[in-house]
Image (cartoon, rainbow, N blue to C red):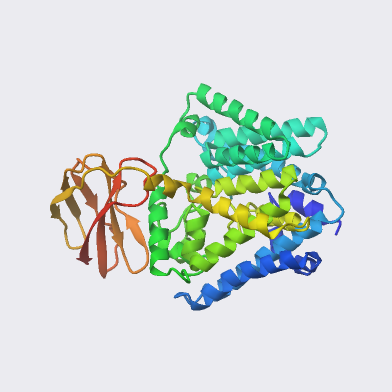
Length: 480
Protein backbone atom coordinates (compact mmCIF):
# COMPACT_ATOMS: atom_id res chain seq x y z
CA UNK A 1 0.00 0.00 0.00
CA UNK A 2 2.02 2.89 -1.30
CA UNK A 3 -0.45 5.46 -0.02
CA UNK A 4 0.01 4.43 3.64
CA UNK A 5 3.14 6.60 4.27
CA UNK A 6 1.29 9.60 2.80
CA UNK A 7 -1.66 8.95 5.10
CA UNK A 8 0.73 8.72 8.05
CA UNK A 9 2.20 12.12 7.16
CA UNK A 10 -1.20 13.80 6.77
CA UNK A 11 -3.06 12.17 9.69
CA UNK A 12 -1.69 14.50 12.42
CA UNK A 13 -3.40 17.42 10.64
CA UNK A 14 -6.35 15.38 9.31
CA UNK A 15 -7.18 12.88 12.09
CA UNK A 16 -10.30 11.45 10.33
CA UNK A 17 -7.90 9.60 8.03
CA UNK A 18 -7.43 7.16 10.93
CA UNK A 19 -11.03 6.02 10.47
CA UNK A 20 -9.71 3.94 7.57
CA UNK A 21 -8.09 1.64 10.15
CA UNK A 22 -10.63 -1.24 9.84
CA UNK A 23 -9.46 -1.67 6.23
CA UNK A 24 -6.28 -3.18 7.67
CA UNK A 25 -7.93 -5.91 9.75
CA UNK A 26 -6.91 -8.62 7.21
CA UNK A 27 -3.25 -7.79 7.86
CA UNK A 28 -3.59 -9.28 11.35
CA UNK A 29 -3.41 -12.73 9.73
CA UNK A 30 0.30 -12.12 9.14
CA UNK A 31 0.99 -12.12 12.87
CA UNK A 32 2.17 -15.17 14.78
CA UNK A 33 -0.36 -17.34 16.67
CA UNK A 34 1.08 -15.97 19.92
CA UNK A 35 0.40 -12.36 18.89
CA UNK A 36 -3.09 -13.24 17.65
CA UNK A 37 -3.85 -14.91 20.99
CA UNK A 38 -2.74 -11.77 22.81
CA UNK A 39 -5.02 -9.58 20.67
CA UNK A 40 -7.90 -12.01 21.16
CA UNK A 41 -7.49 -11.80 24.94
CA UNK A 42 -7.57 -8.01 24.77
CA UNK A 43 -10.75 -8.04 22.66
CA UNK A 44 -12.41 -10.49 25.06
CA UNK A 45 -11.41 -8.30 28.02
CA UNK A 46 -13.38 -5.50 26.36
CA UNK A 47 -16.42 -7.43 25.16
CA UNK A 48 -17.13 -9.84 28.02
CA UNK A 49 -17.34 -7.22 30.81
CA UNK A 50 -19.32 -4.91 28.51
CA UNK A 51 -21.93 -7.64 28.04
CA UNK A 52 -22.73 -7.50 31.76
CA UNK A 53 -22.11 -3.79 32.38
CA UNK A 54 -24.99 -1.66 33.71
CA UNK A 55 -25.00 0.74 30.75
CA UNK A 56 -26.96 -0.45 27.66
CA UNK A 57 -24.49 1.14 25.24
CA UNK A 58 -21.48 -0.61 26.78
CA UNK A 59 -21.40 -3.62 24.43
CA UNK A 60 -21.76 -1.78 21.08
CA UNK A 61 -19.21 0.82 22.20
CA UNK A 62 -16.80 -1.92 23.29
CA UNK A 63 -17.23 -3.63 19.91
CA UNK A 64 -16.52 -0.35 18.12
CA UNK A 65 -13.36 0.21 20.15
CA UNK A 66 -12.17 -3.36 19.51
CA UNK A 67 -12.64 -3.09 15.73
CA UNK A 68 -10.96 0.31 15.56
CA UNK A 69 -8.00 -0.64 17.78
CA UNK A 70 -7.41 -3.93 15.96
CA UNK A 71 -7.55 -2.10 12.63
CA UNK A 72 -4.85 0.24 13.86
CA UNK A 73 -2.71 -2.72 14.92
CA UNK A 74 -3.21 -4.16 11.43
CA UNK A 75 -2.09 -0.85 9.93
CA UNK A 76 1.05 -1.11 12.06
CA UNK A 77 1.68 -4.60 10.67
CA UNK A 78 1.28 -3.22 7.14
CA UNK A 79 3.74 -0.42 7.90
CA UNK A 80 6.32 -2.90 9.17
CA UNK A 81 6.33 -5.04 6.03
CA UNK A 82 9.71 -4.66 4.32
CA UNK A 83 10.63 -1.50 6.24
CA UNK A 84 12.81 -0.75 9.24
CA UNK A 85 10.89 1.04 12.04
CA UNK A 86 12.74 4.30 11.43
CA UNK A 87 11.97 4.16 7.71
CA UNK A 88 8.31 3.27 8.31
CA UNK A 89 7.76 6.08 10.84
CA UNK A 90 9.70 8.79 8.99
CA UNK A 91 6.52 10.31 7.41
CA UNK A 92 5.07 10.78 10.89
CA UNK A 93 7.79 13.33 11.68
CA UNK A 94 6.73 15.38 8.65
CA UNK A 95 3.15 15.30 9.94
CA UNK A 96 4.34 16.45 13.34
CA UNK A 97 6.14 19.41 11.78
CA UNK A 98 2.92 20.48 10.09
CA UNK A 99 1.08 20.10 13.39
CA UNK A 100 3.68 22.15 15.28
CA UNK A 101 3.52 24.96 12.72
CA UNK A 102 -0.27 25.02 12.87
CA UNK A 103 -0.17 25.17 16.69
CA UNK A 104 2.02 28.29 16.62
CA UNK A 105 -0.26 29.95 14.06
CA UNK A 106 -3.46 28.95 15.85
CA UNK A 107 -2.19 30.10 19.26
CA UNK A 108 -1.27 33.50 17.86
CA UNK A 109 -4.66 33.69 16.16
CA UNK A 110 -6.42 32.96 19.46
CA UNK A 111 -4.32 34.99 21.90
CA UNK A 112 -2.59 37.64 19.81
CA UNK A 113 0.14 39.55 21.64
CA UNK A 114 -0.60 37.65 24.86
CA UNK A 115 0.48 34.35 23.29
CA UNK A 116 3.70 34.34 25.35
CA UNK A 117 1.67 34.39 28.59
CA UNK A 118 -0.48 31.31 27.91
CA UNK A 119 0.15 27.65 27.16
CA UNK A 120 0.65 26.70 23.54
CA UNK A 121 -2.48 25.04 22.21
CA UNK A 122 -4.20 23.79 19.08
CA UNK A 123 -7.78 23.67 17.74
CA UNK A 124 -8.00 19.91 18.35
CA UNK A 125 -5.31 19.25 20.96
CA UNK A 126 -5.13 20.27 24.60
CA UNK A 127 -1.83 21.80 25.78
CA UNK A 128 -1.08 18.53 27.58
CA UNK A 129 -1.62 16.41 24.48
CA UNK A 130 0.27 18.88 22.30
CA UNK A 131 3.27 18.79 24.63
CA UNK A 132 3.23 15.01 24.52
CA UNK A 133 3.35 15.07 20.72
CA UNK A 134 6.29 17.48 21.06
CA UNK A 135 8.08 14.82 23.11
CA UNK A 136 7.34 12.18 20.46
CA UNK A 137 8.80 14.51 17.82
CA UNK A 138 12.02 14.84 19.82
CA UNK A 139 12.36 11.04 19.98
CA UNK A 140 11.71 10.72 16.23
CA UNK A 141 14.35 13.36 15.51
CA UNK A 142 16.89 11.41 17.56
CA UNK A 143 16.24 7.99 16.09
CA UNK A 144 15.08 8.43 12.48
CA UNK A 145 17.77 9.11 9.87
CA UNK A 146 16.29 12.24 8.38
CA UNK A 147 18.48 14.68 6.42
CA UNK A 148 20.24 16.71 9.09
CA UNK A 149 18.34 20.00 8.43
CA UNK A 150 15.00 18.17 8.82
CA UNK A 151 16.22 16.31 11.90
CA UNK A 152 17.38 19.56 13.52
CA UNK A 153 14.12 21.34 12.68
CA UNK A 154 11.97 18.50 14.04
CA UNK A 155 13.97 18.27 17.27
CA UNK A 156 13.96 22.03 17.87
CA UNK A 157 10.27 22.48 17.10
CA UNK A 158 9.28 19.41 19.12
CA UNK A 159 11.27 20.67 22.10
CA UNK A 160 9.80 24.17 21.73
CA UNK A 161 6.26 22.78 21.62
CA UNK A 162 6.92 20.69 24.73
CA UNK A 163 8.39 23.69 26.56
CA UNK A 164 5.74 26.23 25.55
CA UNK A 165 2.84 23.88 26.23
CA UNK A 166 3.88 23.52 29.88
CA UNK A 167 3.08 19.80 29.70
CA UNK A 168 4.58 18.02 32.71
CA UNK A 169 3.14 14.76 31.38
CA UNK A 170 4.99 15.32 28.11
CA UNK A 171 8.21 15.86 30.05
CA UNK A 172 7.58 12.64 31.99
CA UNK A 173 7.03 10.86 28.67
CA UNK A 174 10.37 12.14 27.36
CA UNK A 175 12.06 11.05 30.59
CA UNK A 176 10.75 7.49 30.41
CA UNK A 177 11.25 7.25 26.65
CA UNK A 178 14.84 8.46 26.99
CA UNK A 179 15.48 6.02 29.84
CA UNK A 180 14.16 3.22 27.63
CA UNK A 181 16.70 4.12 24.99
CA UNK A 182 19.49 3.50 27.48
CA UNK A 183 18.51 -0.17 27.68
CA UNK A 184 19.33 -0.75 24.02
CA UNK A 185 22.33 1.54 23.55
CA UNK A 186 20.08 3.86 21.60
CA UNK A 187 19.79 7.62 21.73
CA UNK A 188 18.58 7.66 25.32
CA UNK A 189 21.51 9.78 26.52
CA UNK A 190 20.67 12.40 23.92
CA UNK A 191 16.99 12.34 24.88
CA UNK A 192 17.75 12.78 28.57
CA UNK A 193 20.26 15.51 27.77
CA UNK A 194 17.70 17.41 25.72
CA UNK A 195 15.18 17.03 28.54
CA UNK A 196 17.72 18.56 30.90
CA UNK A 197 18.24 21.48 28.50
CA UNK A 198 14.48 22.04 28.29
CA UNK A 199 14.17 22.08 32.07
CA UNK A 200 17.11 24.49 32.28
CA UNK A 201 15.39 26.74 29.74
CA UNK A 202 12.14 26.53 31.73
CA UNK A 203 13.99 27.55 34.89
CA UNK A 204 15.46 30.53 33.05
CA UNK A 205 12.08 31.79 31.81
CA UNK A 206 10.05 33.91 34.19
CA UNK A 207 6.61 32.88 32.90
CA UNK A 208 3.67 30.98 34.47
CA UNK A 209 3.92 28.36 31.72
CA UNK A 210 7.57 27.56 32.46
CA UNK A 211 6.91 27.46 36.20
CA UNK A 212 4.49 24.55 35.71
CA UNK A 213 7.40 22.14 35.20
CA UNK A 214 8.47 22.67 38.81
CA UNK A 215 5.04 22.38 40.44
CA UNK A 216 3.91 19.20 42.20
CA UNK A 217 0.15 19.77 42.25
CA UNK A 218 -2.08 17.52 40.13
CA UNK A 219 -4.38 20.24 38.71
CA UNK A 220 -7.46 18.51 40.08
CA UNK A 221 -6.63 15.03 38.76
CA UNK A 222 -7.00 13.59 42.25
CA UNK A 223 -10.74 14.23 42.02
CA UNK A 224 -10.99 12.25 38.78
CA UNK A 225 -8.91 9.45 40.28
CA UNK A 226 -11.18 9.26 43.29
CA UNK A 227 -14.37 9.19 41.22
CA UNK A 228 -13.01 6.54 38.82
CA UNK A 229 -11.95 4.39 41.77
CA UNK A 230 -15.43 4.69 43.29
CA UNK A 231 -16.98 3.54 39.99
CA UNK A 232 -14.62 0.56 39.97
CA UNK A 233 -15.56 -0.29 43.56
CA UNK A 234 -19.23 -0.31 42.58
CA UNK A 235 -18.63 -2.49 39.47
CA UNK A 236 -15.37 -4.39 40.07
CA UNK A 237 -15.89 -7.15 37.48
CA UNK A 238 -17.63 -5.31 34.64
CA UNK A 239 -16.98 -1.59 34.97
CA UNK A 240 -19.60 0.59 33.33
CA UNK A 241 -18.40 0.27 29.73
CA UNK A 242 -15.91 1.94 27.36
CA UNK A 243 -16.51 5.69 26.93
CA UNK A 244 -19.52 5.48 29.28
CA UNK A 245 -17.23 6.05 32.26
CA UNK A 246 -17.10 9.71 31.22
CA UNK A 247 -20.74 10.12 32.25
CA UNK A 248 -19.68 9.30 35.81
CA UNK A 249 -16.68 11.65 35.67
CA UNK A 250 -18.02 14.71 33.88
CA UNK A 251 -18.39 17.79 36.03
CA UNK A 252 -15.56 16.64 38.29
CA UNK A 253 -12.91 18.88 36.77
CA UNK A 254 -13.99 20.90 33.73
CA UNK A 255 -17.77 20.89 33.83
CA UNK A 256 -20.40 18.79 32.08
CA UNK A 257 -19.12 19.60 28.59
CA UNK A 258 -15.97 21.35 27.41
CA UNK A 259 -14.06 21.99 24.21
CA UNK A 260 -10.34 22.39 23.58
CA UNK A 261 -8.93 25.43 25.43
CA UNK A 262 -8.01 27.30 22.24
CA UNK A 263 -11.59 27.07 20.95
CA UNK A 264 -13.00 28.22 24.28
CA UNK A 265 -10.53 31.12 24.25
CA UNK A 266 -12.24 32.30 21.06
CA UNK A 267 -15.62 32.26 22.79
CA UNK A 268 -16.80 28.87 21.53
CA UNK A 269 -18.68 26.66 23.97
CA UNK A 270 -20.51 23.35 23.86
CA UNK A 271 -23.85 23.78 22.05
CA UNK A 272 -26.91 22.40 23.80
CA UNK A 273 -27.14 19.36 21.50
CA UNK A 274 -23.55 18.36 22.41
CA UNK A 275 -23.86 18.67 26.19
CA UNK A 276 -25.39 15.19 26.79
CA UNK A 277 -22.33 13.70 25.04
CA UNK A 278 -19.73 15.59 27.06
CA UNK A 279 -18.71 12.47 28.94
CA UNK A 280 -17.32 10.84 25.79
CA UNK A 281 -14.10 12.86 26.09
CA UNK A 282 -13.85 12.90 29.89
CA UNK A 283 -11.17 10.51 31.14
CA UNK A 284 -9.75 9.32 34.46
CA UNK A 285 -6.27 10.72 33.66
CA UNK A 286 -4.63 7.42 34.59
CA UNK A 287 -4.76 4.42 32.26
CA UNK A 288 -5.06 1.83 35.03
CA UNK A 289 -8.01 3.60 36.64
CA UNK A 290 -9.57 4.22 33.22
CA UNK A 291 -9.50 0.51 32.42
CA UNK A 292 -10.78 -0.46 35.89
CA UNK A 293 -13.69 1.97 35.63
CA UNK A 294 -14.59 1.00 32.06
CA UNK A 295 -14.14 -2.79 32.12
CA UNK A 296 -13.33 -3.80 35.70
CA UNK A 297 -10.52 -6.15 36.62
CA UNK A 298 -10.76 -8.19 33.37
CA UNK A 299 -10.38 -5.04 31.28
CA UNK A 300 -7.40 -3.80 33.28
CA UNK A 301 -5.65 -7.17 33.00
CA UNK A 302 -6.36 -7.32 29.26
CA UNK A 303 -4.94 -3.86 28.73
CA UNK A 304 -1.82 -4.61 30.78
CA UNK A 305 -1.20 -7.82 28.83
CA UNK A 306 -1.61 -5.97 25.54
CA UNK A 307 0.84 -3.25 26.57
CA UNK A 308 3.27 -5.83 27.90
CA UNK A 309 3.07 -7.69 24.58
CA UNK A 310 3.72 -4.49 22.63
CA UNK A 311 6.80 -3.77 24.75
CA UNK A 312 8.04 -7.35 24.45
CA UNK A 313 7.78 -7.13 20.66
CA UNK A 314 9.65 -3.81 20.65
CA UNK A 315 12.42 -5.11 22.94
CA UNK A 316 15.79 -4.54 21.31
CA UNK A 317 14.52 -1.88 18.87
CA UNK A 318 15.36 1.52 20.36
CA UNK A 319 12.86 3.67 18.47
CA UNK A 320 9.78 1.50 19.01
CA UNK A 321 10.62 0.76 22.63
CA UNK A 322 11.28 4.41 23.48
CA UNK A 323 8.08 5.65 21.83
CA UNK A 324 5.97 3.00 23.57
CA UNK A 325 7.57 3.84 26.92
CA UNK A 326 6.75 7.51 26.32
CA UNK A 327 3.07 6.57 26.05
CA UNK A 328 3.30 4.53 29.24
CA UNK A 329 4.97 7.38 31.13
CA UNK A 330 2.22 9.76 30.03
CA UNK A 331 -0.35 7.18 31.15
CA UNK A 332 0.44 7.86 34.81
CA UNK A 333 -1.39 11.21 34.76
CA UNK A 334 -3.29 11.17 31.44
CA UNK A 335 -4.85 8.85 28.87
CA UNK A 336 -2.59 9.23 25.82
CA UNK A 337 -3.74 6.12 23.93
CA UNK A 338 -7.48 6.24 24.43
CA UNK A 339 -8.98 6.04 20.94
CA UNK A 340 -10.43 7.59 18.89
CA UNK A 341 -8.39 10.73 19.43
CA UNK A 342 -6.92 13.57 17.34
CA UNK A 343 -4.39 11.03 16.01
CA UNK A 344 -2.51 10.65 19.27
CA UNK A 345 -3.70 7.37 20.77
CA UNK A 346 -3.81 5.88 17.28
CA UNK A 347 -0.02 6.11 17.10
CA UNK A 348 0.28 3.78 20.09
CA UNK A 349 -1.63 0.97 18.37
CA UNK A 350 0.29 1.52 15.14
CA UNK A 351 3.52 1.12 17.10
CA UNK A 352 2.07 -1.98 18.78
CA UNK A 353 1.31 -3.57 15.42
CA UNK A 354 4.85 -2.89 14.24
CA UNK A 355 6.21 -4.38 17.48
CA UNK A 356 4.09 -7.54 17.31
CA UNK A 357 5.20 -8.09 13.71
CA UNK A 358 8.74 -8.58 15.09
CA UNK A 359 7.69 -11.42 17.43
CA UNK A 360 7.95 -11.65 21.22
CA UNK A 361 8.08 -14.06 24.16
CA UNK A 362 5.30 -14.68 26.68
CA UNK A 363 7.56 -14.50 29.73
CA UNK A 364 8.95 -11.10 28.72
CA UNK A 365 5.44 -9.81 27.97
CA UNK A 366 4.22 -10.85 31.42
CA UNK A 367 7.21 -9.26 33.15
CA UNK A 368 6.81 -5.99 31.26
CA UNK A 369 3.04 -5.96 31.91
CA UNK A 370 3.81 -6.15 35.63
CA UNK A 371 6.26 -3.28 35.28
CA UNK A 372 3.64 -1.16 33.52
CA UNK A 373 1.13 -1.86 36.29
CA UNK A 374 3.71 -0.73 38.84
CA UNK A 375 4.43 2.51 36.94
CA UNK A 376 0.76 3.39 36.58
CA UNK A 377 0.16 2.66 40.26
CA UNK A 378 3.05 4.81 41.51
CA UNK A 379 0.87 7.70 42.79
CA UNK A 380 -1.20 5.26 44.82
CA UNK A 381 1.78 3.36 46.19
CA UNK A 382 3.27 6.66 47.27
CA UNK A 383 0.02 7.60 48.97
CA UNK A 384 -0.04 4.39 50.97
CA UNK A 385 3.34 5.19 52.54
CA UNK A 386 2.39 8.64 53.85
CA UNK A 387 1.66 8.91 57.61
CA UNK A 388 -1.84 10.09 58.49
CA UNK A 389 -2.32 13.28 60.54
CA UNK A 390 -4.62 13.20 63.60
CA UNK A 391 -8.36 12.67 62.91
CA UNK A 392 -10.50 15.83 62.58
CA UNK A 393 -14.03 16.47 63.84
CA UNK A 394 -17.02 18.24 62.30
CA UNK A 395 -17.89 21.25 64.46
CA UNK A 396 -20.97 22.44 62.55
CA UNK A 397 -22.71 22.18 59.17
CA UNK A 398 -25.17 24.75 57.83
CA UNK A 399 -26.65 23.26 54.65
CA UNK A 400 -29.59 24.89 52.82
CA UNK A 401 -32.18 22.70 51.01
CA UNK A 402 -30.47 22.49 47.63
CA UNK A 403 -29.89 26.19 46.97
CA UNK A 404 -28.07 29.19 48.36
CA UNK A 405 -24.81 29.02 50.29
CA UNK A 406 -23.70 26.38 52.77
CA UNK A 407 -21.01 26.42 55.47
CA UNK A 408 -18.90 23.75 57.16
CA UNK A 409 -16.38 24.02 59.97
CA UNK A 410 -13.93 21.33 61.13
CA UNK A 411 -11.86 21.10 64.28
CA UNK A 412 -8.40 19.59 64.36
CA UNK A 413 -8.25 19.60 60.56
CA UNK A 414 -4.91 21.38 60.20
CA UNK A 415 -2.87 19.63 57.55
CA UNK A 416 -5.94 18.53 55.57
CA UNK A 417 -7.50 19.74 52.35
CA UNK A 418 -11.30 19.94 52.17
CA UNK A 419 -13.39 19.39 49.06
CA UNK A 420 -17.18 19.57 48.79
CA UNK A 421 -19.01 17.54 46.15
CA UNK A 422 -22.63 17.35 45.03
CA UNK A 423 -23.52 13.93 43.63
CA UNK A 424 -26.51 12.91 41.56
CA UNK A 425 -27.45 9.44 40.36
CA UNK A 426 -24.28 9.05 38.27
CA UNK A 427 -21.93 11.99 38.25
CA UNK A 428 -20.57 14.32 40.92
CA UNK A 429 -19.46 17.92 40.61
CA UNK A 430 -17.15 19.87 42.86
CA UNK A 431 -18.61 22.93 44.58
CA UNK A 432 -15.86 25.51 44.61
CA UNK A 433 -12.30 24.23 44.44
CA UNK A 434 -10.86 23.28 47.84
CA UNK A 435 -10.16 24.76 51.25
CA UNK A 436 -7.55 24.35 53.96
CA UNK A 437 -8.84 22.28 56.84
CA UNK A 438 -8.55 25.10 59.36
CA UNK A 439 -10.71 27.48 57.25
CA UNK A 440 -14.47 27.97 57.28
CA UNK A 441 -15.76 26.17 54.19
CA UNK A 442 -18.33 28.23 52.29
CA UNK A 443 -19.84 26.85 49.08
CA UNK A 444 -22.65 27.71 46.66
CA UNK A 445 -25.06 25.31 44.99
CA UNK A 446 -25.35 25.40 41.16
CA UNK A 447 -27.97 27.81 39.90
CA UNK A 448 -29.33 25.44 37.23
CA UNK A 449 -29.67 22.42 39.51
CA UNK A 450 -32.73 20.36 38.46
CA UNK A 451 -35.16 19.13 41.15
CA UNK A 452 -34.32 15.83 42.82
CA UNK A 453 -32.40 14.15 45.62
CA UNK A 454 -28.66 14.69 45.87
CA UNK A 455 -25.79 13.67 48.15
CA UNK A 456 -23.60 16.44 49.51
CA UNK A 457 -20.16 15.08 50.38
CA UNK A 458 -17.38 16.75 52.36
CA UNK A 459 -14.05 14.99 51.79
CA UNK A 460 -10.84 15.54 53.73
CA UNK A 461 -7.56 14.76 51.99
CA UNK A 462 -4.01 14.80 53.22
CA UNK A 463 -2.25 18.05 52.65
CA UNK A 464 0.24 16.47 50.23
CA UNK A 465 -0.95 17.16 46.69
CA UNK A 466 -0.40 13.59 45.51
CA UNK A 467 -3.04 12.33 47.93
CA UNK A 468 -6.08 11.37 45.86
CA UNK A 469 -8.01 9.27 48.39
CA UNK A 470 -9.89 11.01 51.22
CA UNK A 471 -9.18 9.83 54.74
CA UNK A 472 -12.47 11.13 56.12
CA UNK A 473 -15.86 11.84 54.58
CA UNK A 474 -19.16 13.30 55.73
CA UNK A 475 -22.35 12.98 53.70
CA UNK A 476 -25.80 14.58 53.78
CA UNK A 477 -28.91 14.17 51.63
CA UNK A 478 -30.09 17.35 49.93
CA UNK A 479 -33.54 17.66 48.33
CA UNK A 480 -34.32 20.39 45.86
